[in-house]
Image (cartoon, rainbow, N blue to C red; front, side, top):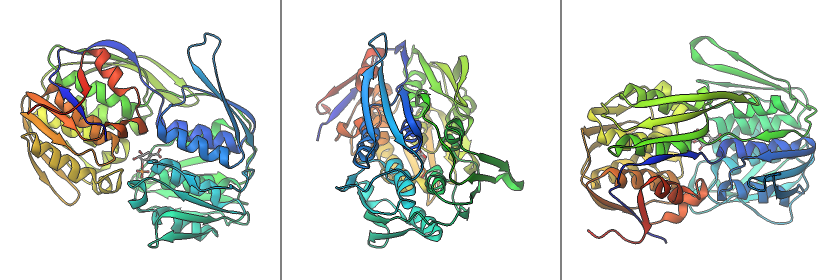
Length: 450
Ligand code: S3P
C-alpha cells in the first residue's frame, strides 16, 4: 500500500480544470451502449471506477475506442451502441472494482437482458448492501443469486419479459432509482419510481437527451415521481461531461482552510441536486464565487473561485443529505477548522459507502485532535476556530474520499498527516496529488515524520 503524507501547506493559488464527473461518466457509457449508433464522449473521467464500467461494457459486446480531439489534447471516447436490450452475454465475470455506481447501475441494465452475468468487485464493494437493488429488480421479474443473500459476487439472471416497476423508495438513492430506470428501458409499458427527496437526476436528464420519454413530477411533502416509457428509441449522441463537483470539493475546501489561498476550479458541474456542499460552505461564511455559468445537455456548469477566510459551525439538516451525500467527509474537515459546533443530521447512509464514513471521519478527526461525537446517524464536530494539531496516520479503508479529506486536513493542520493507502484515490481522482501540488500543496509518497 502506498502511504502518502500531506505537509502543512503554503497558500494555494491557481486556476485548474475539474476532472470529469464520475456519475455522469458511468451514465454516458451505459446509456450510450443502450442507444443505436455512435456516441462520442469528451471529458469522460479517466479513473479506475469508470474504466471498470467501460471494460464491463466491452465484455458485454460494446465496441469502444479512444482517440484525441483535433487539438490532440483532449481524449475522445467513441462507442457503438447496440440499442435497448442489445447487450451480449459476457464470457467472463464482470469486475467493477471499487465502483458501487458501476455495479448497481449495471445490475439494472442487465436485469432486462435474457442471460446470466456475474458481477463482483473489490473487498470494499463486496461488503456493500445490494438488496436495495436486487429487491425492486426482482419485483420487475429478474432474479439474482447473491453471496449471503445480498452481497457480491452476484449472478444476475436477466429476462426480456420484465414488468414495468412501480416503486416507492425508502431512501433517496440515485443508484437505486437509476438501476430501476435502466431496467425499464428494455421493458414493455411504464416504469415509475417515487423517491422521498429528489436525488441527483443525471440519469433522467441523460436519458431524455438520448431521446427517452422521461417525466418527473414533484409530489406534496417533497417527494418526486419519475416515469419512463419503455422501449424508447435512444439515438447515439455527443456528450460533454462536466467537471465533478465531488472532486472539486477537495481543492475548494483546501483553499478555504489554508491561509492566503485563492483557487479557481473550471467547469464544475453544478446540478442543483449535487450542490448542497456549496450551500453549507456559504452558511459557514465561506467566500465562494460562481462565474461563466452555462448549461450542457441539461446539466449546469460554472467556474468556482474560493478564498481563504474564517468559517463558523453550522447544522446541516437531513433534507440536504441527498444533494451532498459524497461531500460529508470534506465538510467534516471544514467543520474541524470552523469556529463553533457543527452538527450533521440524517446521515446513516454514510455507513454504507466505500467505507463506514461516519466512523472513519469520527476516528480520523479524533486522531487529529478534534473533539467529535459519533451518533447512530449524525456527527457533531467541535470546531477549533483554526488549525487542528494533525500529526496522525489515518487508515483510508479503501475509500478515496476518506483519503483525500485527510490529505486536505494535513495541508491546513499544524503537523503533517499521512494516509496508509493513496492508491484508492485513483478510483475517482487520479490527478489529485499533481493538481493539489500544482496549486502549492505539499503531498508526497512516504510516511509522516511524527
Ligand atoms: C451516485 C449516487 C450516490 C453517491 C455515489 C454516486 C450515483 O449513491 O454516493 O457516489 O452516481 O448515482 P446513492 O445512490 O447510494 O446515495
